[in-house]
Image (cartoon, rainbow, N blue to C red; front, side, top):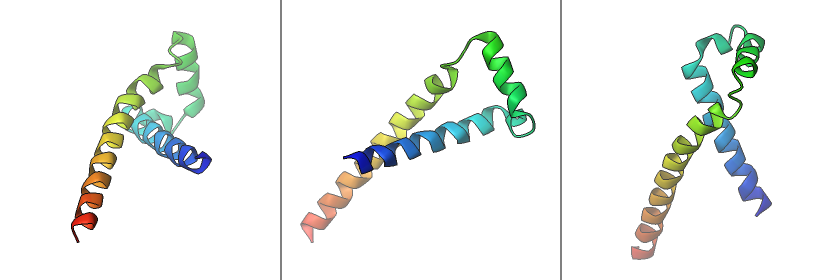
Length: 76
């Protein structure tokens, strides 16, 4: 169970980082400047609010593919 949670956290963090780099290209050049802007505006949960829906969509897609593969393997 712990292994599954770690894997899901890796997926979530990977999606978070990919979205952050796509949405804020200056994050690669000055990450401290981006963090200071975030703290000035007080939107600490902003990245998580964008990441969770994408993570949920990817998770549903993964479940669908897993289900279809199980059906295929059962039919063989």
